[in-house]
Image (cartoon, rainbow, N blue to C red; front, side, top):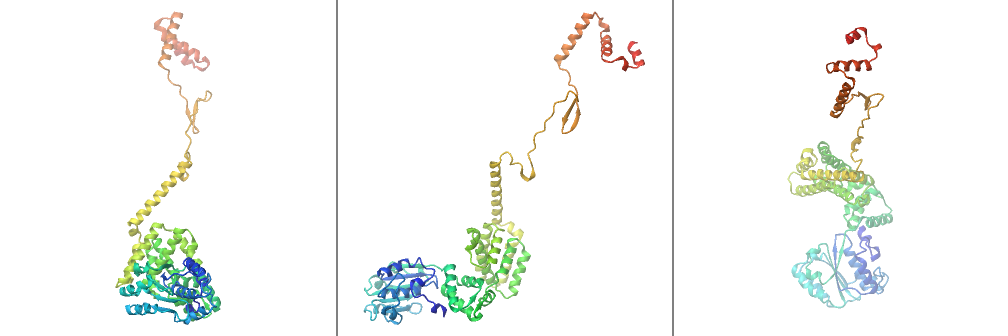
Length: 481
C-alpha cells in the first residue's frame, strides 16, 4: 500500500500539519515531553503517523527538532519493541481491555527508556473504560506516556481532555497534498495529467491517506500514465462540463435546456444523488470564487475555473447562495425519497422557471438591491457633476431661448430664424393726453373754427405726410371737394 510505503518517519516529512508540530518539535529538541497527548482531527491527516513518530522521539537517545534520529539503538528497536503498544479501541473498547493496558503500565520498560501506549479511535471506549483510564492519565508512572487518537473530539469526556495535551489536526490543504503526490509519482515513475491530479485531491477531501489510496487505484488501472478521462471513469466522477451546462441553464432561467441536460445525465447512468452532489460542489466553488474574488481559491482545471468564474458574473451573490441552500435541501430529501428522479426534476423546474423565481422573496430582494445600487450611482453622478447630471441618455440641457430686440432697419423679431413683423405698441394714457393738449394749443394759436377742426386736421396731416404725386386725380377731387 502506498500510504504505508510512503508513511513519514520524522516530523520533517509530514505535510500540511506544520502548525500542529510546533510544540512537538520544541519538545523533541529539548527532550521534555508530556505524559499524555490527545490527537484529534479529520481522517487520514496523520494522527497515527505522528503518534508513532512521537513514541520514537520519546525513546530516542539523540532527539532533534525533526524527532527521532533514526540511527540509534532505540530508534532501530522501536518498530518491534514491546515497550510501544498500540490498541485499537474500535474493537477493544471494554473495561477489561483498559484494565489490562493500565496493568502493564506499572512495570518498567524492557528495551527502551519509556513505555508508550497508543490508543487509536479512543472515542469508541465505553463510559466505564474511560473511568478506568482517568487515574493513569492523571498520575502516570514516570516511565509511561499515553497518546490518544480520535476523529470525534466531541465524544471524549471533559475529564479525559483536561488531563491531556490536545492537538487538533485540520484537513490537509491542496498545495502540500499536491506536492506530496508529485513526489510519490516521481518515485513511482508515473505520469499524471494536471486535471487528474486535481481530481484526486478533490476526491480525497483533505485526507492524505485517501489521496494515496486513490492514486494507487489509478496506477493499477492506468499503468504508467494517468489521464483525466481515465481518472473520471475509474473514480465514477461526474463530468463537470455537463453539470456546468445544467447550472448555466438554471442561472439563465432556461427550464427547457436545464431539463434536457439533466435527462442526458440520467440516460448516461448517473444517479440523482451524484448529480445533486456534484452540482452542489460546483456552486460551492462559484460562491468561493465570487466571495474571495480570486480564481486561485479553487483547485481545478483551467477551463473549469474560467467557466465557473464567468458564470459567477451572471448571477447575484444572494441568489447564488440561495441556490446552494436549495441543493443542500434537495440532497437531504433525495436520501429519504422513494423517487429521487422526480425530486430532482421538480427542483430544477422550481429553480429555473421565470414565473416561480420572480415571485420568490430572494428574487424580490435581488431586484431591490439592484435598484439601490442604481440610485447610489445616480447620487454619485449628481454629486460629481451637479450641472450636467441631466445629460443622461443623450439628453443635453438646452440653453434658454433669447429674443432679439427689434431692429430699426428691419422692424422684425428674430426667434429661431422665424421672421415676425414688428407692430408698434399702442400709446399709453399719458401720451394720449399730451397729444390732445398739443391739438388744443394748435387750434388756439391758429384760430381755427372748432367745427372744422377735425376736417382741417385730417387734410393738413394728409397733405403733409402724403406727397401729391402719389395721389390719383379722383382721390384729389374728393379731398378738395
